[in-house]
Length: 204
Image: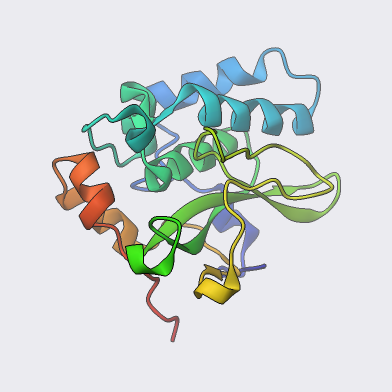
């Protein structure tokens, strides 16, 4: 993994989608910090909140489309692109550097179902001086992501024989193509089936 931005400060900044300066996000970040023992515990509790308490749109069969971190927190639902914005926002609000990563996965179990881009997060853990990827998509039968500093427990394992990709970049802001699909969609379920990008654009 490597950071796209050369400055760690970029992974601490608010933005259009990672809008942690909004009241709803800043208040939630303060609430999450209250009972945490240390920074690592805060990272874990924040991750667990987004993974477990924010529903994944497809799993919940919820048509609402959320985009920004504040949208997701207010509505309590979102696809991976939106949930990644929220996790990054809540961590940054507590001065923990966080970015967004991507995978290219088959939409179903096999390549004939097509492909989609999946979003997850990376957080810089100062105590071990490295980035750790976390996937807050939400667990379900067959998907079991978790928090660990020793080993990744992501929602999906990339199968290279199926041309799936673990993109190595850590972005300070979500890739525009992922936000564009959210902003133009009115039905999250239809978007999930037919509107998701199937790959990231090449970095030039």
